[in-house]
Length: 198
Image (tube, rainbow, N blue to C red):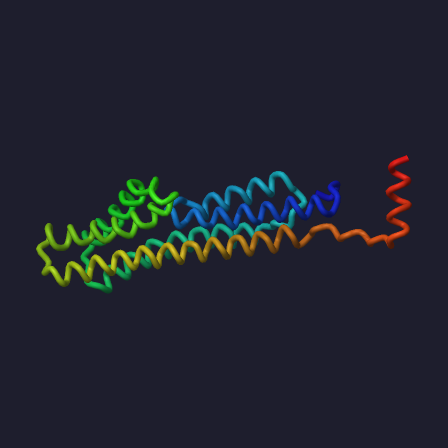
């Protein structure tokens, strides 16, 4: 982007970082936002070969994507287990979260996906523990609540990993931005404008 004026270069870079920030919010809707963010960063590198995105940057970025996925699943499983859920209840909570996110996605301008994932995790775990496995009602409620809270905390962890990815990418693509040209004093600006008009 060395061939662009400073303001336009800054505007394009800022718009790209803003786009990445909005993409991270897709995690709330249950979409693979961190993978989309990785893909957009690859496209940026392809369009701007001179960008300072070296091998260690890609190792860190892919590591953050995988960490976000592992945290999302791991926190849900660990929290459900901590509240007394069985393996089948935890698996049913994961399936319920996926089904709920898909079914309620059109509601509330897309926020239904988050609500659906939380409610789906609760219903999946509760139905499995109470109706299928015969767990006492109070224990099944506790297990379902643990699965639902695990889903919520897992989504937060995944959003956090996405935020780290945006910060890492923004720091690297703004690292080599062109310096702003020296500002001219007022009379020189007037002469410059008049010279270009005539």
